[in-house]
Length: 362
Ligand code: GCU
Image (cartoon, rainbow, N blue to C red; front, top):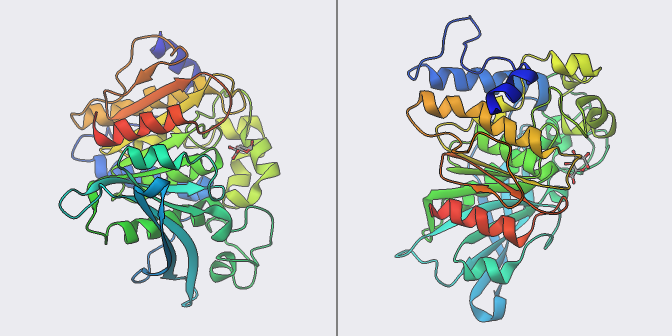
């Protein structure tokens, strides 16, 4: 049944190189680069280059969560493309159980603002480190003609080349810089480093995780259009609509593929390329039953369509029965994970707990 549903989407081939030759396991790293290039060129813009060391300073440290954790407020500084330093605030939530002797799994959590969607006490009880930053302290989530925060460091004259990064790319780059910080801490287990975001920040987490191979686990919560959801025959939000309302999230070139539904359905990529670019690492997608704007079925089908990449590399992709998921299904056995929560567009405790279990390898 799932193969039939996928056929109807008429997706661009994942396992054919751009020169028409078949992708082999040996060629996977090369194919992955092609996928990233297609997504850079057509959708998000070039993923920024790291130009030097990331530094941080601690501003404040408090005991939190009834005294079982420490929250450190830090400023993270990295060299921007114009040669100047850029600094953004972040929070490190560290449970007492995370020590050099017992390093903990950790998430870079890209947030809408402190402390949205963050059930901190439960998260600390689960023993995971959370490093969070707010998108609006890196790049303003609105039209600013590239004049505020990180944007003018990329486009000092306000002009952007066709493949210049949009704001999703800037947020994703900041997620990688916060990963630099986490990876310098001895109480963090580098073999369990997740990146997570909800909705527009789920799109961002996928783009960060697709590019930065230090993220071992990549989590997309309700990311929908231009995130985990297949674009071809998607319901709810479409490329034309998302680019009309949020053009600054994407590259200028994305306008080519969002000019009409037909244009979006003949783009040389679809969103299963984004999930597959995480291979051979792990990617996990979650949907909510009432989130029609994001389109749970298209999010699930992207997991199915991306899975052959892992199979080619001798790993399991999504392990799922041959039917669409039902509410509360969790499919977390493979290197592609998925769950469908009942309810609305939200990042809930149910979602967090499943992500934590997946990150721990349970
Ligand atoms: C809007 C947008 C979505 C996005 C969502 C969010 O609904 O159309 O693409 O995912 O905002 O970020 O909450």
